[in-house]
Amino acid sequence: MSLAEPATLRATATAQAELAPRLHVVRRSVARLKASLPAYLLLSPSLVFLALFTYGAVGRVILDALYQRATPKAPSRFVGIDNVAAVLADPAFAGAVVNNLIYTVGTVVPSIALALLFALVLSRTNAVTSALRAALFLPALIPMVAASALFMFIFLPNVGLLDYYIGRLLPVLPNWLGDPDIALGAIMVITVWKNAGYYMLFFLAGLQAVPEDVMEAAHLDGAGPFQRLRHIILPELRPTFLFVTVIAVLQSVTQVDHVFVMTKGGPANATNLVLFYIYQEAVEHYDVGKASAATLLSLGVLIGLTALSFRSLASREGGS
Amino acid sequence: MKMFKDMPLATRGEITPKLGFALVVLLALVWLIPFLWMVVATLRPPSDGINAMAALMPSLSPTLDNIRDAWEIGDFPRYFLNTTIICTGILLVQFVTVTMAGFAFARLSFAGKGLIFYLFLLQLMLVPVLLIVPNLTLVAKLGLYDTLSGVMMPFFASAFGTFLMRQAFEAIPSELEDAALIDGAGIFQRVRHIYVPLSLPSFSAFAIVSVTSHWNDFLWPLMVIDSPDKRPLTVGLSVFTATAEGTQAWGTIAAGTLMVIAPLLVTFLIFQKRFISSFMTSGIK
Image (tube, rainbow over the protein chains, first blue to last red):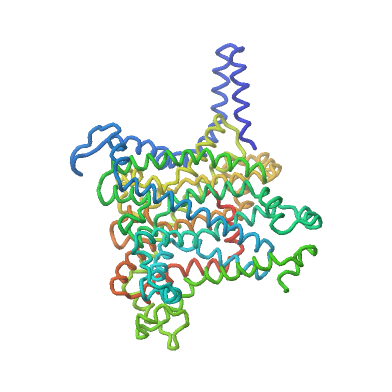
């Protein structure tokens, strides 16, 4: 990759700087900046928008988290880490974090397991597998809001699709979205339904790297399908696993449209997720300070993930 | 079975792959049930009663009443227009920004290249969705609250698009450009006449991913837009659903949902191959 190039260039430049006369260095770096000018011009539109809505936004989150208003109209005053402390002490936030952890594990693991199954079975391209891939990918294409509208009816008590076909077999009809013990699970079902087919695509791409002759050789040596999966396919798919896990976790933190449409975080905060908590604090309680503090905490967690995904990206590029 | 004829000879006798295949066929059918219900419920006359609402057997007397009702209750043509404006606006600006930035990364050497590359990479993680609160205050400060431009603006720069274009441009042999250089063509002429025409597949892949993802955006436009006549499809559908849910008009909800996703579904079914391969590159959107 060309990433290493500028770093080495800079290293040699500094090494020369210690030896060469100062004027020479200045002239050289001016010349280098001048030569870089066209590139900077080309990058500037992107950098302006990134500065406003990505880096600047992070900066504003930090600032906003340090200030608080007594009432929505009052002037804001500096409160230090009070907002962060208030968020951490808020049982609703703690609940949202716990819910989000359950939700993340409960959606990432089954989505990836299903995605792998789909990809293994549909790895060969023909008319039948193409149709099946399309059917499984379809949910990924539609808005989460539309998926939620459909699932609202599926989970509807008594007359909904689930109760109509399956509920009859149960002794008591559960209130899928109304029971605090079940609602989060119901929300997770939608997410798995919607994302598994999308993650399948990455496993399909990853499977192309598994050499066919090695598979046949393993078979001739007496390796069964599960042994081939464990010793040949899974090791080959490691980078794909890492990569898909990262986007699936990101997705589980940033996608809350179904919570908004179906449950509004209820019943009894059972389906409240972190981003929905942030939305509520900002839009419904007008508490920008607290919303920013909660955003800041989530960013902290995601920055940990960023490090992880840089590694996964690097290994993906190295592999291809 | 015909399905397994193209499998390697040695593994053709195994039973596990066949069981796996049967399981996936079953799951694919389950996966399609919500769509099937949507279509059946849309065509079901309200006179069938609420208890037949869940039946997946199509009604014997199909009707378009639900579609008409949904059309009348929701302002769908307006929502369509707004979503189209948002997606087109974002895409057009993105084409310009990602082409320029992609070219800089692919073909130019400049001071701080590595650092700036990582700055772009950062955007993939600091997803705008999570930064809704600070971005809402900024949009309000810029006077863009309750405007479609306000909805579009945070997405004008795209790290994913930049990397995609960088990759496409790097694959173009530089000999092609040398001829143009001799003829004295400037950077913009070379990008326009050599790089862009040769990278159309990448542009279309990016367009598919960008339009699909912004077609589906919900929380951000929900926060920025206040006036009913500026709502995009997703926000319109959620308001529509909440209204119709109160009257238990599930056939109408199914019809509204169908109208919202029909354009995406039809486009997908026509350009299926292209969609799938575009989304395969979209891991870093």
